[in-house]
Length: 83
Image (tube, rainbow, N blue to C red; front, top):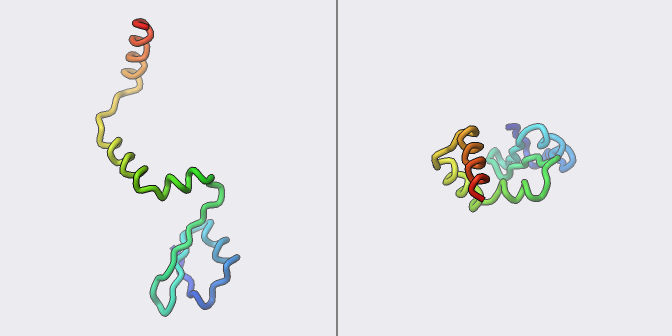
């Protein structure tokens, strides 16, 4: 992360720098803002990235038991035989 003093910051420069790394804006030596570059991301990515509900769901799913790809493929084959 890079820090820049608010009084010396210009918006265009901050936006450009934020595409490379997070940029902390300080006032009187204290952090007051964080600028994060999002160039190349779409609206859905931005919304999901900042959604508490989404991240709670991801955390919950990561705690669940996983299945190997080969077992999943076998289950799908078995399912097709019975339909």
